[in-house]
Length: 370
Image 1 (spheres, rainbow, N blue to C red):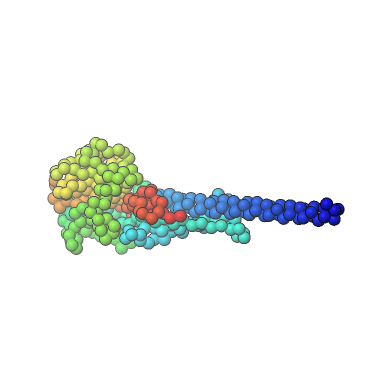
Image 2 (image 1 turned 30 degrees about the vertical axis):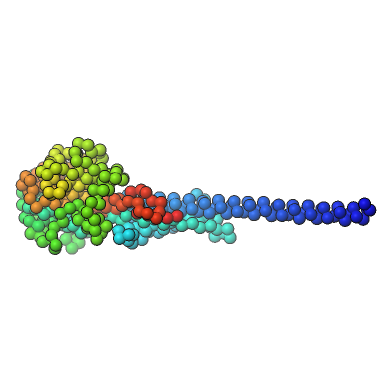
């Protein structure tokens, strides 16, 4: 081979090598860039999912929380979460929209969004007062019934409560019992006799007084067709329990606790430590709770027949039976029934279940999309 040919061959090899090197370098750069992009997108998704979880934890503590988060620093990126009240498959819900951002405000910025629907707590229309009943009511001892609003911890909130007692029948206030409440934004401290603005007697329920726990929560029109609460209790979701023998209950109560007794059955001398929705009911509306002696129950108590409240109930009580088994003495000791909108919202807001179309499976989550 001549010297000239050798030089041409060598130049070609050098050119080819340079081209290959540049292509390899470019490919490596693209691979690195793609890997970086994937990592940033995945991090943004993780931030978004964390935002949903953070919002759910806030709602678990306070069902009226709607503040959200704005450009919060999380995992080296930014997080924004918004919450709005809406409906999902016919149920009142809170829509949580969580957006995670990495490389914020840079050319390689990545964003990801997660959306979840959480069961929205509501105060059932049947809760007319701290105590709502379909039978004559008698208060004795030092029982305090207070329809003024309270936090779930029992602290007074001024100007936004309800009646102390609402009944379709009569009210007899005896002993040293006291009744208070809120009427048109004015609070009335518990007293004897009760201020007339804090009680309602001889009331008529259009269409008939609710006769089942599901109808107390609004029935099918509000997402609670007959059997819903019992099914939730039987599922065990969120610590819910269903028993026919109260001695089998695990305390503290949480979620939906459903005690179904035989006709004329009585659950007697119980500790009521717990939260959520507590139901004592049967088809005959004659399941009784007698001597509610200890513990603090925070939430919504629905029972056919309630006899002798000696403990603290924060939330509300709805009694179903028109014919109490042992007279009409709902309390004859040192008990307290303190109305709490927060406690009711927390109780009703935590009883949703996972629906199809998402990843949500926690109590109160109806659906969750990434």
